[in-house]
Length: 281
Image (cartoon, rainbow, N blue to C red):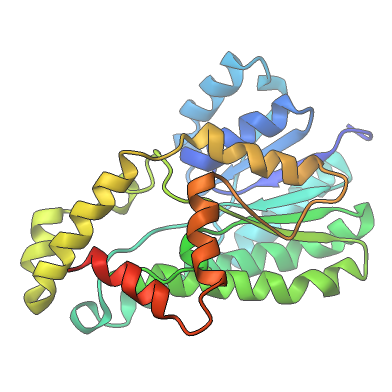
């Protein structure tokens, strides 16, 4: 293992994380595939076996919201392998709702997983990545660039991650660590299902926002019908791990690039507001 690059990926029980773990192993990395509940690792193990890379995929427990779990996992990786070459921050949780109806608790919970969890894993990994000249690749979202209706908490967390990583990147580069973000758009995975959304109950509880929420849900379900696969979304992650000079920011599809480009060219915000306003009309 001394000459094999060791990559830790969070949130690998399904979706992009699972696909990225298998793809990184196929690219020759030794992957420490982490998840909060290792009892959910069967799908990952089966996919790794089918790809012929089971020996390069090591399942480990890591709860990004628990600093003790983060420390324990990183310590174990260093004890077993003596090095850490890259971290892929992928673990995350979505939330659909609006703050007037739902209050602050869901906002805090969403920030805890999607922002503070990423910060904590990155903090713990940086000393080891300095030693190896490694990389931090964080899976954010087009929702980390473009704010989207009824995703206030999720987009706030992803915006925060983008700002954190963009600020950290030159600092980390000064000590030999590359920092970058990967921005998927709609991906056909278990991400929506994992939110446990009861759509009828959600609409019933939406009060005066119910018509806008219904329009948003209808539009979003249609968009996910045209989504890319987790395997397609994982390809840029592996490229970011292996490219000699990877960019700071990369999108996972042409649709994602066009969507993000709309925001980056929209100096006064009017184009984005017109676009996202049509989703709830």
